[in-house]
Image (cartoon, rainbow, N blue to C red):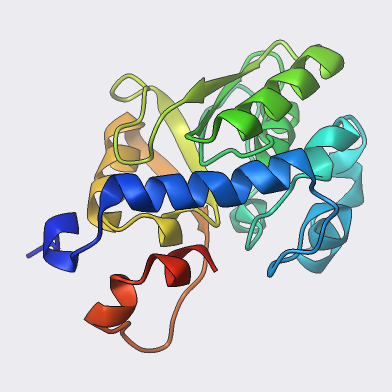
Length: 204
């Protein structure tokens, strides 16, 4: 049986606002000190191929705040449709767009307006025709059923209280035999209920 937000005792609106504020700060000033790594140094830590970054605007790279490398599970193929859940400043969306080429398409989805603004500014600068960015939540993706060959996500599922709902949405937007390439944080032991109810722990 899945655990609902109410059962966890977490106010979803309050949690989302705290997460928005955190990543709005990254979007506004990505070079300041955070409790997590960001930017080009993080891409090196996570074994991103430097060649992937060649055509990506620096404003996107510097706002990178992922936790892993979804492309380590496989390079995307030409012509594939991709959804990037929690696309942030857009780095993984741009990498995916370059991998799938002009016959493929990428939709980045994020809930933080400041990150979407940064990603769309980079998109205008890069003049990339096969990627778009939409505002939305991982639990209710603004994507048609069965549209994607691949769903990617990087460091976002851990921020969602209802992970089962988010995973169902990823499955819903996938074509039959589609795949999920998910990079995220894992814990070695269960988090206590009191911990789950502490919004400060969700964001840092």
